[in-house]
Length: 134
Image 1 (cartoon, rainbow, N blue to C red):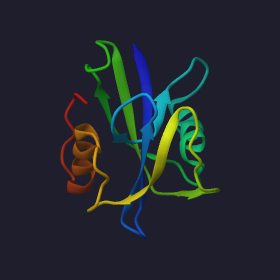
Image 2 (image 1 turned 90 degrees about the vertical axis):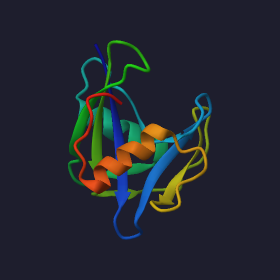
Image 3 (image 1 turned 180 degrees about the vertical axis):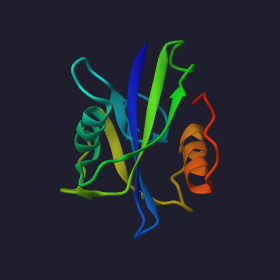
Image 4 (image 1 turned 30 degrees about the horizontal axis):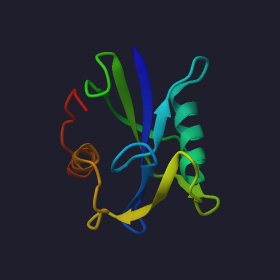
């Protein structure tokens, strides 16, 4: 089994969410990455948020759901966390992996936001029961 961690970084003061756009994958999505041997899921999430957005967690994220991501492989799972306690320590600068990143108003997501990203936001904001599959 492979396990990934993704973070829904919500700024409740501005009613916005942090999204990234990779250089090698189409669409805007939540930051995150695969859990490496010897790391916890939360350690991975914290590392990926820092690498992909200069975002430092200032409190523990809340596990929202664990999904089977059959689109990636039959063995892929994603742990999705909601992150409300954070600070961005510096503006994000594009690099080889991340073409763009930023906070977007929840009612004005960028064109190209992936359907899965939109669905996860609807589940979180609407208090919906998350499905088993990503």
